[in-house]
Image (tube, rainbow over all chains, first blue to last red; front, top):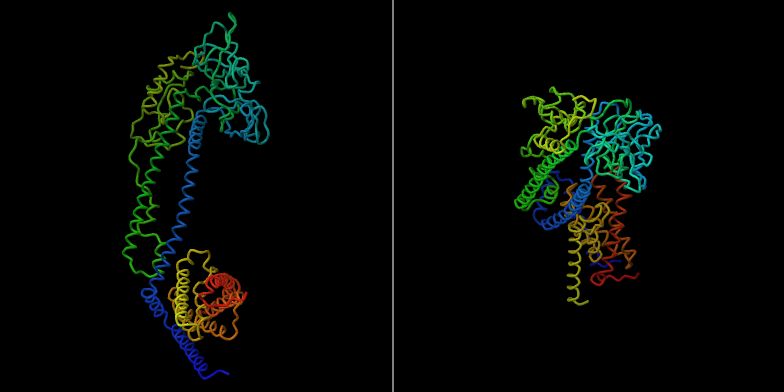
Length: 446
Length: 167
């Protein structure tokens, strides 16, 4: 039994409960607009410290998530930067291979080399093309620099190629000046390393200077005529009065080949014009590097624009935070996650046009359309005839880039339009003057 | 208990409640999912109601509900009614049959959170599948986490709360 004082406490408590419930019910059935106004007034007055606390907490959580995102982005960029040199090298090599494919007149099949981590990887290569792609046994395998080997086994989907490093490898060859013929074989272990070739059977009376390019002769019906095999670097041995054996630096490295071309029939056509001189190859590499540098400049411009936009964003946010003052919790918290005008949205804007640079080589008029002399057989001396080709007027429309880098049918006598820069001309002339070769291959048109 | 001791305990209680309020608005947004993270305001309300009469508990619940409604403008007034009922019932049940036991305290806090959610959702007009999901999944999880945190606070500040824990 409760005492009277306890009952008064109970009644007071009950009245307090009823009063609170009545006020709660009134608040519940108030018009929504009034409820929002009342809540806003509370947030802006007595609850402002709590709103401030919650804002700080939200800022901390947002900063932490942003920090994680920036860290992940930085790690991704660092990882991409590590693979950039590899990608550049592969890009350059693919450009060269694309150019070779455009210059070849014979049918070919592009293949990817599936390297195996074995010690004999350089001797035998596994290609990802087979009978379904038209590859047959004894099809030559070439790289942009020169000969890789020939196909020895074919399955429906794959093929095995024997490279010049294989001890079984042989090829009939001749020097680029047509002065000497011989048989090329891998260097014997006693006289040379496995990374060198030997030109055997050269008559003693034929002296070949160092630096002479040796090409496939086309004899034997396996290799087309004109595939670069290597360059003379010295004499291995000589039998006085009988023959000389020369050491060759191979033109192509099978261990480094990632993409190759498998030449299918016919094999009796000459492919001399498809393999330009070293100077042309250097010019192509320089052009590729110039394109890459141009692309990098565009990327740098975009990055600078993004940084400026981010700085503008932070400045605008700071100004907005200063001006906001006693903003409400919900509004301020939501505003923290919204992009401010001219802020983050500016990051996505297209970068301004990069600084004007020299026009890319691909935009130059196609020189291949102009009349030009027939393709000479000699590789470097043919560049002498190049200035005679009339250069189209600059007002001609630009051709699409990429495929015109080295057009099909383009010869050494008239380098593709892409390489018609002063640098290329200077390099070709210098190379020609240094070698001082002549068109001496018999039977080839001048 | 001397008046000086009573005054000291009152200030200690205010300090702990203030700490819980700061945790609610500064730490809770940084925690994991807000649906299941502990409700520090409910802990403060229950601890206050345990030391007060039912009327004072109802008023405290009214204030807490007003704060909740002002900070979460979904249905103004629903939080007031829910917290008022919880505050009153917490104080009333503490006076009638509540025992000084850790597990009973934890269950008491969990029941308070679940009842708050029940009344809040009912008054707000939530029904159907969402009401069932809230009451069977999220409300029990939040009640569990809140009860665990409440036990931690009880153990840490049992001297200040003048609560005799048997277990």
